[in-house]
Length: 326
Image (tube, rainbow, N blue to C red; front, side, top):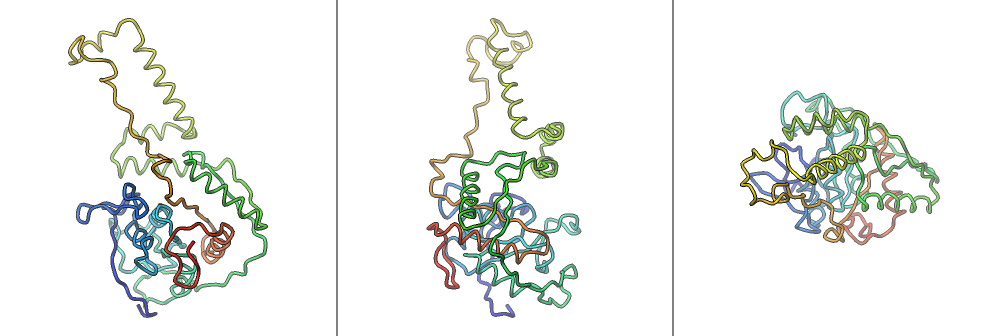
C-alpha cells in the first residue's frame, strides 16, 4: 500500500488451506472460470479465478505444497513461489502457531511474468519495521540472461504418472526452447522417497486414512506404476476365485439372500475417472520452472524466456504492462 497499491478484495480459500480444491462451508465452492464443472484449484484458488476473469492486476497468495502453483496451472495465469522468507508473512494466518518446520512462502499471482517481476522488484528487500522477524533482507538483484541456457526436465517423478496433457505440455516446451537455441537435458531416476513421505503424511494426517498410509509405507522404493501393477494382479486373483464352481462357506454366511443377488451387484462400482480429455478440452495446462534458493530473479528470467519461446497461446487476461494476451 505504501507503494500505491489498492487492495480490493479477499478471495476464497478451502477450509484448513490444505486442499487442491477451493471449498469451505462459509462461502461455498469457487469453480474454474474456463469450465465451471471443474475446480479452480487450491488453496489460493479464488485469487487465481479472479485473475483469470480479468478482475485484478495481481494478487498475493501462499504456498507450501502447491497452493500458488496448482490454481495457477488450472486457471491459466502466472505465479511465483519465492524462497521462503523473502516476502513477509506478517498478517497471514496458518492452521496453528509454531509451524516453523515447514514454512509457508508468500508470493505473487499475476496476469503475466511482467506483473510478477514488478511485484518482486517492489517487495524484495523492503523493510517491514520488524513486523516479521524471520524476513530475509535480500533486495531484488538483476540477472543478466545468457544467450543460451541449459534446462533440465522430466515427465515423471517416479511416483506418479503424468496425464497425457501434462506430459505433452512439457515436451512442447522442450521443443520450443530447443528451437530458440537453448539446451534441454532429460532428468531420470529421480528419488521418490520425499514424495512418498509427503503423500503418506497427507493420507494419515489430513485424510484420516492410516490404513492406506501404511500401504504406501510398505511399498518401499517401488514406483506408483509398480504398485498399480500389483493391484491389477490382485484383481485377477479375485476374478479367478469367483470363477470357481462353488463359493466358500465364509461367503455364503453373509446376509445376502441366496439365489437373488448377482455377483456384480455385490462389487463396488468403478469410480468415475478424474481425467477426461474430451470434457477438459480447451482448459489450460501449466508447466513449472524450478531454480535454486534465493535465485528467484533467475526463475523469473527463465519464465520469461519460456513464455517467449512458446509464443501466443490465446488464453489468459493479458498483461496490463504492455504485453499482449498470452
